[in-house]
Image 1 (cartoon, rainbow, N blue to C red):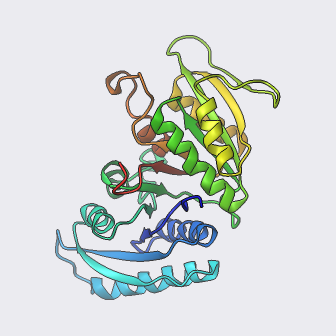
Image 2 (image 1 turned 90 degrees about the vertical axis):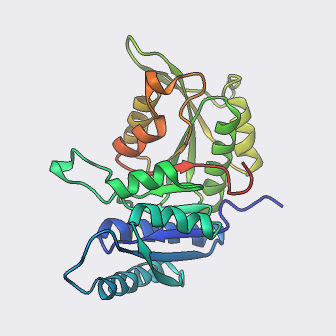
Length: 279
């Protein structure tokens, strides 16, 4: 029997529409995969509050519970206390969560800052996969794009993307980008009868093992930019990327592919990590 995509999911809400959308998308994945969902609100203890923040938190949790209930999930809720970013990461660690869902908690300065401090910290420091949710349709996810590079980690990432696609009925596209930092970008789709290059073949096998026949795509250019552009072009509503970037490309030269994609993609992004206890 194939392992489920997720075994325990945590959604963090701050009462904002973005956070409620994250809870809704988490609930959609839970319905599809059979994973249980919990929702938390962090009472920020790092500064004083004039209002009754616990009451605000309870109200935010009640709204989130209604949102996930409309998807068909009955999720327990709880208040926790601490610095929000650190508290969410610690909740995931202590409770053996393998997916945390958060909203971008930003959108300020006319959209110039698209991921706030809390979300960025969770994406960077969580011990598990992280879903950074942006607005999506009711049938999320319908089109999934997964960036792969031929490494062992990217094969596992493709397997997770395929598990989500198999559970939800979404289309899966596997995109391998040949890193080129000068010149024009190029993109192409492999024909159905065309053999996969060695950088793609292991990920294709991982997807097929999950019962999914992926669309195979190739590109040349900066990997992080190519993934974002392809997602926008194809109407993708979920991008899945590994947390280590691209094999063979230094962080100094490229920066983190996952950080760039979570910041610049117009759609939801799932940064995949090994299930806690398996890495």
